[in-house]
Amino acid sequence: MRIRRRSPRKARIEIIPMIDTVFFLLVFFMMASLAMTVPGGIPVNLPKAAKAEAARAPVSISVARDGAVYLEREPIEPDGLTARLQARARTEPELAVVIEADAEVRHGRVVDVLDAVRLAGVGKLAIAVTPREATR
Image 1 (tube, one colour):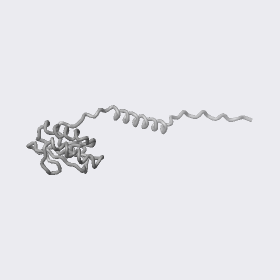
Image 2 (tube, rainbow, N blue to C red; image 1 turned 90 degrees about the horizontal axis):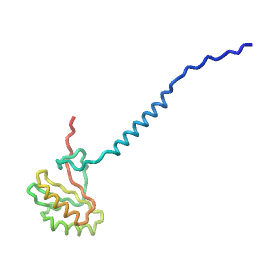
Image 3 (tube, rainbow, N blue to C red; image 1 turned 180 degrees about the vertical axis):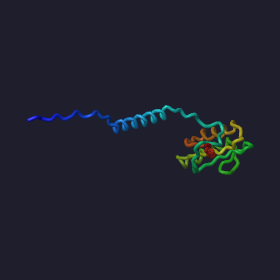
Image 4 (cartoon, rainbow, N blue to C red; image 1 turned 90 degrees about the vertical axis):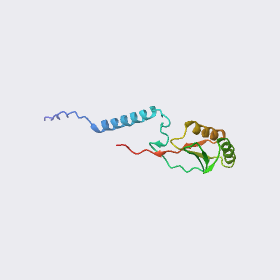
């Protein structure tokens, strides 16, 4: 009796495990490149931002074009601002402040307001911006 020999099977390249590996590497390199980016800080044009979120804060500080400072629509000097925020921070430990500065205001005036807020001991601080139009 003769035993038939099976013909040798053709070699095949299994593509599905290779696709899984390629996708894994793609995701790995994407995540690694995102971790390597260094945030550049605030754009020079402060009133515009690529992504602006609507934040509701209990305290709103506005700086008008002429440099006048308003605490919740009430005119105030940065020296008095520190005392008012300290009093409010005692009653509200999670106090958050949003600074809304006009695009034309001097940078030094905004820094004065930032100093007043920091001296008051407020930890949560944000600068209000408007969303930038999408460019295509």
